[in-house]
Image: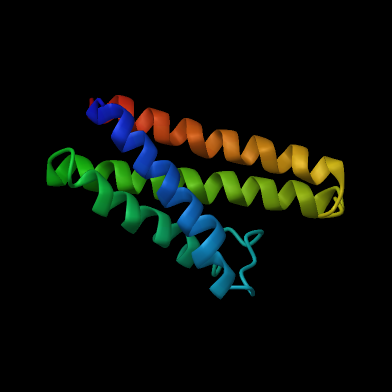
Length: 119
């Protein structure tokens, strides 16, 4: 199996861990605040990305893509949260899950870009 595939797989697993597991410990995060407490969540993503990518590239490039992941995750989640709040989207509605699907696709695109940068 190629290193690119392994890295992409690890980033997807990392995403699931940070988005679904770690986030459950921070129930009071308000991602509609641009510089609010959501930074903890984005930091989880960037630190884990750093730890993973250090196995595939140099320290400076691993830091750069971890920073990219932090900034991308922050802005994707911020705009998703703003849209959900602005349009008063019910979190159990089909509209919410369509927005959530777009959110996840953008995160996975970020990981694809990270792999492309490294390789």
